[in-house]
Length: 153
Image (tube, rainbow, N blue to C red):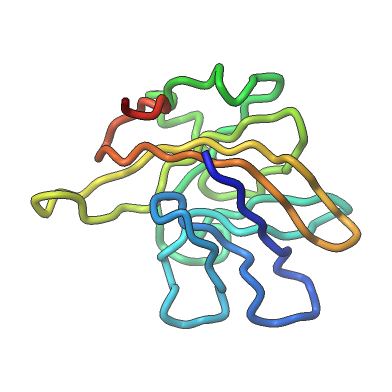
């Protein structure tokens, strides 16, 4: 697992990383035109709370999605759900401490030219609503279409 920080889209500063690519473990600046569709979720403030936004919420065609699991520990979350109806693709998902989020990445080309989804999990560690900053822990399986969230040994 690795920690990362994101900044809310509504902050005054431009070009702050407000989105994240789970597979590459990189922060993404959405304002950069070359990043369109190359990220899995963004951070924003709406109605007095922090929310995750999938690319589809912002009008970008993508199958990236999230599933919140309140009250589950990071280590307990061992497999991404197989039920695709659980995944949220088209509305804001509230960011809350004590909740684990399973992320299905946007489609990517994997080994041997296969189209792949990758699955990961994240846990908010610190939410600073006033500053519009989120610190979180994340881990992503490197295996194409593998829903296991346990790191390979």
